[in-house]
Length: 160
Image (cartoon, rainbow, N blue to C red):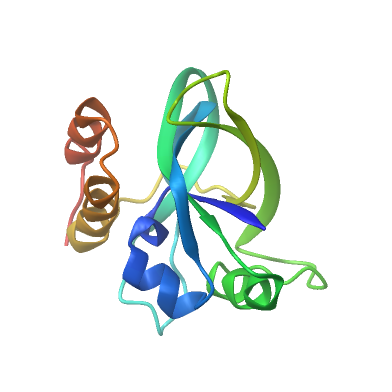
């Protein structure tokens, strides 16, 4: 399965911990969406519990850069669990969806990938922890996403 990571899963060490089969394919954009922090992490095992966690929300004027990974089917369940998604459960934190992304941001290079979107968004949007935002920025920098997008990430409001 191709997986489009736009949050802390862009960090390769985190992806390999969750999905040992993960291999980096390339960077890509998800057009017509923007990065948001639309729900609070609720797991007491999470260092981000009570803080905002990443989501992509529709926005025709925006795009989200991320990393595309190839993941073996044997690891998909582990990725689902790490994202708070169980296909047989009525209430999930995220749901896995198919999206079209563009390799290297080029419309002539579409890829069909899976990603995760928040099921129930909170209003107002919760604020993320600065360390969580730093992980997203570190992942983006590690794959050399465009500097303009990294500057956008660096402007995210965070609090401890």
